Length: 594
Image (tube, helix red, strand yellow):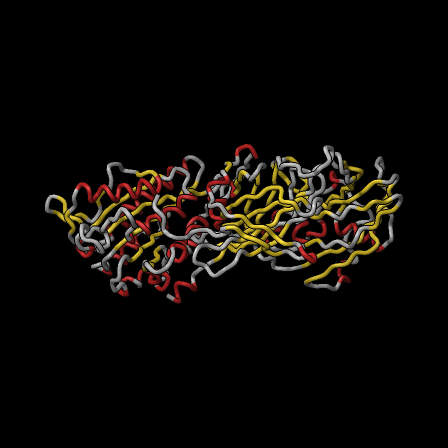
C-alpha cells in the first residue's frame, strides 16, 4: 500500500474568478458596490476538518461585474472532490454579503476549457476558470515606485499590463493594479511587486524561466477612479522593464501627451529573489520606452511537456468509461443477504458503491457519458463466458444506466460459474479504446479510455494476465481493478508494478474496496494515476493538446442548488480573515443511490 501512495500526484492549478450582474448593495442610486470574493474550502461529512479559508481577492471599486486579479493556487488530487464556497462581500458597506455560491474543482476540470459558470444566490453569475500552475523555477521580482504629474484633482490608480496574442490580435492582460490616490498635482504610489514570470510572454511563462522577460512589452495605464460612473483611462504608455531600468538610472521624466496624467517618473527600481544583485542589469534596455510597433514577439521557447490540465482544456480530451463485473460463483448466491451481489433496496452492495464512486468522478470528464458494461465468469448455454454484454443495450447512459444494467442481470437470471479470467475483457476494452481514439482524432478531438474491473475473486492465470497487459500497453487505456469483499488479493497486487519493473508502460492499478471508509479513499487510490498515464500516452506519441477558444456565452451555467445547501460567513476583525459561522458547511462523501 505504501508504494501505491508514493505514486500519487497532486495537480497544481490556479483558480481565476470573475462575476457579473451582481446585486447592488450600495444605498446610493448612482453608486455601485465594491465587491471582493472570499474562497473557503469545505470539509465533508465525517471529517475532523473545519472550513478552511484559502484567501480573498482585492476589492474592485464601483462595479457589479468584477474581474479580480488575485488568483488562488490549489493542489488538486484527481479522484478527490474539492468543494469550495465563494462568498462575495461589499467592501464599501461594512462587509455586507452580496452573493454566494459553491463550485467543485473536479467539475470545473471536466468542463470545456476548464471553465464553468455558477448561478449565485440571491443573484449574479460567478465564472471560475482553472489553468495549470507550475511552481516557478525562479522567484525573481521587480519592484518600482511610480510618480505621476496630474493636471486636475482626480482619484488616480494605474495598471501594469502584459502583452498577449490571440491569433493576430494583441491583447493586454492586467498583472498589477495600484491603490487609488486623490491628488491635485503629483501622485506617488507605493512600491509595487511584480513577478517577472507574470511579465514574460506565454512561451517563457510555460518554461518557467525569466531570462528575456525584462525585454517583454508591458503597458502602464493610468485610470481615473470614479465612484458614480465607469472608470476612465487618463493616459498610457508602452515600455519594457529593461527600458524602465535605464530611465530610472538616468532620472529621466517620461513626457506623456494628450492626457490628464502629463508626466511619469520611476523614482526607484530594484529586483529581488534569485540573483538579487542588480549589477548585471545596468546595461539592460534602451533610453526611452518603445512603441508597440517596434516590439517584436519573443522567439518561442522549447515546448514543455503538457500536463493533464493542458489536455483537458480547450475542447478537452474525453474520458471514456467501460465497466467489467465479476459474476463468478465465488460471489455466492446473489439471493442470500450478505453476499457481494445481494441487492437490498434499502442499501447498496460493494459493486454498486464502487460503480457510483468511480463513475461519478469519471462522468465529469465524459461529454456523452455512454458506457459499455460487460460481465465475466457466468455460464450461458453450458459455456462459461469471460466477456458478455450486461444490460439490454450496447451502451448505457451515465452511472444510472450502468447500475440499471447491473440490476437487470439478476432479474433475468444468471448462472454463476468460474474461473476468474480477465484477459478477454481487457482485450475487448483495448480494441474499443483504439477505435474510439481514432474516431476522435478524425473529428479533431482526443479520447482516452478507462476500464473499471470489479472482481470478488483472484485472477486464475497470472502469466496470461501479465502478457495481455503487455500486449495492450500501447493502447489509449488505463485499467482499474477493484477487489470486492474480504478475499486475499495479495496474488493480484503484482498488477500494480510489474510493468514499471519490466520497462513497460504502467496502465494498471489494483485497489481493495474498504467498506469501513468513505468513497473519497477509494476514488483517490483508484484514479490518482490516470493523469500521468494519459499524458505519457499522448506525449510519447507526439500528440499535443488541442487549441481553441471559448466565448463567455458558451460557458455552461450550473445551478446553485446542484450542490448541498451550506453557508459560510467570515470574520474580518482586526484586519484578519477567518470563518465566523457555518450552517451545514459540509459535503457528504458517503455512497448515495442515484
